[in-house]
Image: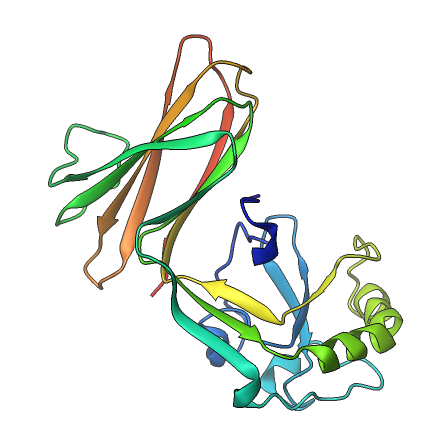
Amino acid sequence: MIKEDESRGFSLWCPEPDGRLPADYASGVKFGDLGIVTEIGGFDILFNICLPANHPIHRTHGVPPGFRQVILNDDNVRFIPSWDDKEEILVTQSVTTNNATLSSSLSGDPTAITSTGAALRYEFNSSSSEGAVLVLPEGTSKADIINATEFKELAQENAAAWYHFAYSHLGRTSISNDSLYLITGYDKSSSWAVSSFSGAVEGTALSFSLTATPVVNGGCRCGIFLVQGPGNLCQISFRSEPWI
């Protein structure tokens, strides 16, 4: 969806964790999670190779035959608490950022989400019929496994067994041979807004704005609204989350 830098991995449309997961998953995915990107853009965790077979994450689905836990040492993890700066914006190539303005009132905009305090409003243009924007009001942290050799070797040895476990035992029958993802790194944010669009008239400028407003518990809430030129019709999707 956001492919400004493919080395950053797969961007999820719904990155927030499944509410059915154990409490220690409240902050999202973990190293060693093996799962599938769902049709709605979430991550369906099947099991975790860094956690023991009797961990609460495995109570629902169990673990595949021959499961072996990988012991992950803290010395093998690189963590950068401020990877993306606050108010970082990631866009596809056709999208340009016009400006960002600080406003104390949103009362003139009936589609914006209102809140107390100042709001930061971003404006974008796109020259393409499709594109995407990711705004990170609070920036991101980044974590990666430094030496992932053991993870790669285990994945190569068990790829067929893991696929069979997902397809036959768990009933994930819509998956293909390249549907399974093993987490060896991630970028996370406490506040985000993402928007994608398609079907706009090619060659006609498409302008849209995004507004981020603070909420009481310290995060940010984001709202987006579309401003289209004459004859410029498209479909737009939007999600935001004050993920505290």
